[in-house]
Image (cartoon, rainbow, N blue to C red; front, side):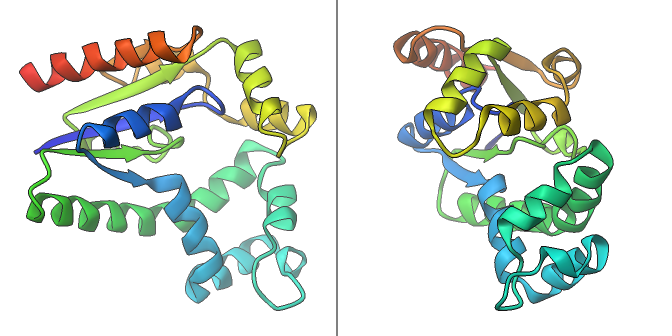
Length: 198
């Protein structure tokens, strides 16, 4: 089974790429989504997060408040790293279980979609790691169109992410996604054909 790591910064096109691979029969594990689920559903993780960031990240029902946590965790790289150290070890266990499950069900491709794949130092697990890149201003405009973050929030999150130039050193393949979706899909098709033939 081909194990593929998929990563990219905010609004780079990573989700579109994951959807494409899924349409080709791949099992796709969305690590960012699973990390959020852990954060808000695991009492053990919640306890560690509250211990690390303080009572102010709690909602009135005692659970983690996503907005309050974001205010604490995305202020600088040290805070983000602290949160990642709590969540990622558990996410990595889930990835390994999901991979075994995908293989058991006859899947030929297993994709892990994760913005922090490189930062988690998990690239060696994969046969190939694909980085989706796009120019900063294009990504800002795409992120603004989602209407869930302000421009300042988008810029803050981008500034906390490892720059693409650094990410490129840690991956085996890069696709530029500055154009339209049709052109992007063609690049993904070419990439998949090449890695399946290798």
